[in-house]
Length: 409
Image 1 (cartoon, rainbow, N blue to C red):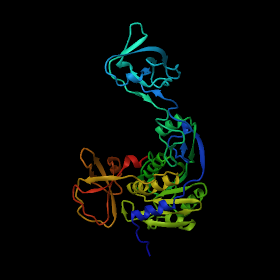
Image 2: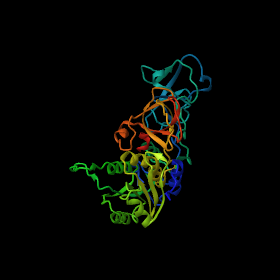
Image 3: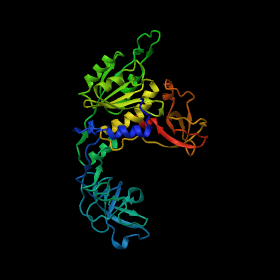
Image 4: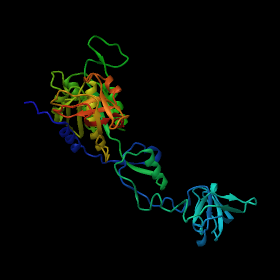
């Protein structure tokens, strides 16, 4: 008996619940850490800034109590000069020190006035200002950004440039990250031809291989690529055997349907376990998931759009959780459809759409050809509009939108 179709929610939960976070970590220099997943919280051992400092170029002033918020002209004697990286002498009441952005506030100083708001005497030994001054103007206090003991970066984030900069700002030179996961891939289909080779009758150029490698590279995986194999059961078993003990995950395209030439599914069942393979969605109904040796297995459909859509909706969250990412699910937001959906469908559909953000709410319009072979729709589209099962929509109604620009990271 054929296995009942699983909903997309059930399929995603099955995959992500089965994903095991990689246990091995490594320590990387900051310049090597971009795009890697942090394996432990990072705490600061220092205050940032480590001292009260000036927020701008100007004059540090020791205001006396009777001068605070006093209208009229105020005059201060210049007794020092403090560039960034230097410390100044203690300021006496009624005195000022020339100070530059980031320089430490000297003892005795209790406010900083911008250089544009005062006038230096001809002799250069005093300044005068005409506006009332309050305490602590333009002073950045110690620990204003970070205090010692603060957690500045959380385990499970994918490190971005700003994260690395923040680590550097507290003196951290290396970061502990999860090791890259190894993903083995191969491709089936005797009709497939490498781009650049001559096409014979009945053949097509292979695009799945290049899409999958590119998407895995986007996710920072180490790839073991067996490329194209012969479309036989023996060759499929041999390819799986060669990958199962050296990979965290094996991904294939094609061969997971029920045709006589679909060999991936029986090969996986012979070597390991197949947990699911039919999803109640379009595009991408045939999708396989299982285990072969130490490797998880995901079998994507062979049609190019189906392969990309199922990778992004299912394989990507599985990979990101395996990598140790805290936020591994795809993000989505509500948009209004700019089309009618007249006929309810028994499967959930992920429609390729173009996003228009000139309206509130943003609207989406669908590509006129939604076949799983229409790869040009993936280039045209900004993302997927999720049309639930058994649903009729009128223009203006809200649906979930999955943006491609975030799923391709």
